[in-house]
Length: 114
Image (cartoon, rainbow, N blue to C red; front, top):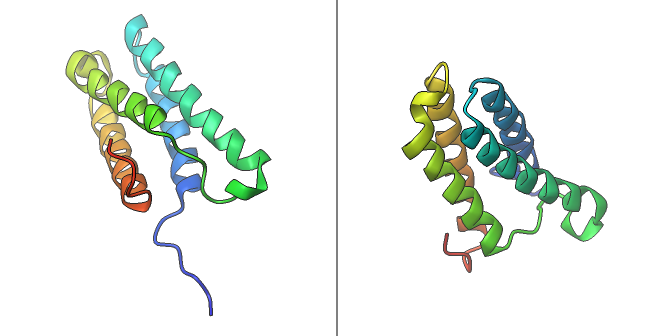
C-alpha cells in the first residue's frame, strides 16, 4: 500500500522561501524588508531542522509561536506595506500562498490554533 501525500510541506516551504526573497527585491521599504527577512529566517530554520533531523523528514516541526509569527508578518505586510511592492500582485500572490500553507499546517496539526 502506498501513501499519497495531498501536499508536500517541504516543497511549499521551499517555494515560500523563494517567494520571500523575490518580495525583498520588489521593495525598497526597509520595514517591509525587515519583516520579510524575519519570515525567511523562520522558514529557513524549519527547513534546516527538517533536513538535519531524520525524525522530521518530510514534515518540519511547527510550534504555535513560529506559525503565529509568520501569520503576523503576513498580515502586517498586507495591511501596512501592500502599496510598497512593485508590482503589488507579488504581495497578493505571496499572501495567498502563505494563507494556504498556514491552513494546511493547521489541518495537519489540529492541536495548533493559529
